[in-house]
Length: 519
Figure 1 (cartoon, rainbow, N blue to C red):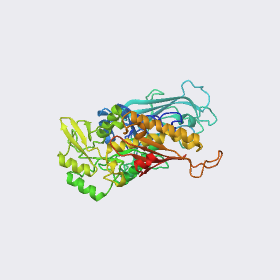
Figure 2: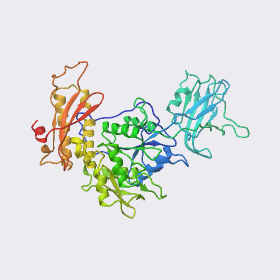
Figure 3: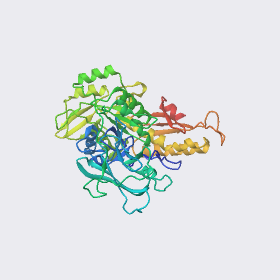
């Protein structure tokens, strides 16, 4: 993840063959939505609401993403990953005039609320020459509030491409501006306005901004080749919970289906708000039957809550926060025995649900948001939207599905090293030992069931059918292996992992436990 401007280079670290796979790690919760300003298409770690406002906020422009993050941190969660999406790629510009033409600076981040200003002076520079100048760039809180939120100072810049301080190169590291267009052969003039001391005046970004449409499903989805929107998450080594935050009350079907496929590939859960038009349980059941949508990697709830302003709002931040807080305290593997999750927040459900209504929702793959006292809420059911899907019927249980995703993602990431080794006996033995130790650690932690650690899981890593590949061969088939494990209270789960150099492909195997253990 990045906390600075996008350099175009991202590094993802993975384990080596000698490193153990950890049975515990931080839960990565990602929120994707529109923010007034800040970096676009870059996952940024945020530790508080104040930090979000500093990086992405603008006075008087809160928006849906801010509301969801405020819920998340109010739940006690410690860190979120924010990906800003924008409906327009247009960027503000600052025009610095000079004797040979205009030097144009363009805001690094798009959007109308990137309020920037710049100043040019020649202080401390040789009086002769026409190449060097000093540049100061400010990011302001608001046009009518000239509070400097960030400042960048560049001394001794040059418009000469052969100079070590060439402005076109020096600003590549700026988080505020970049050079746009042709650079004039002579330096820009000193920033000056009549009646203001030399060097104290600034040139501001252009105030005009054309109206643009609001955020669409396609803005949230982004582009896989450009790494925007949802696909900006490719920069992260792992993700656990993804929340798409649309401008409109409902997430559109295009974004829902695309995000579901992406989360399935990344072994993550997608958390979505229910449609705003759902008012009664009958509406929910009818709509669920008509849509036919089902996925073990998607979770939702009903009803939406009433906020303190009386409006029907989202509770996605509260739900994601409650899951993150639980994971930090007890780990993903230790979800509560009872299908309930405490929700902390000043909200109340728009509809009261009795026990029968909660059961009906659970059968439809929808969790019930219920009030259990003043300021106290519960999410009951703890189900995915799998809705009894085929042989994966056990994945209706959110607790089991999250354990399975944690285990297979940990194995996939922890064994990436094997894709870059020769598929020989030594490599297979190291991999078998690494995964076996991980399963034993899970058993010792109480996540897997069995009389002994041996009963709780197995690893099969045989030689490829065509025999070993000779060292130095142009193409290697990667390495395939099968892992089975028995989550506490559930049947054995068996998966085939194909570690290729591009990615690890994971497939569910329908193997009877006795046959798997015999193999």
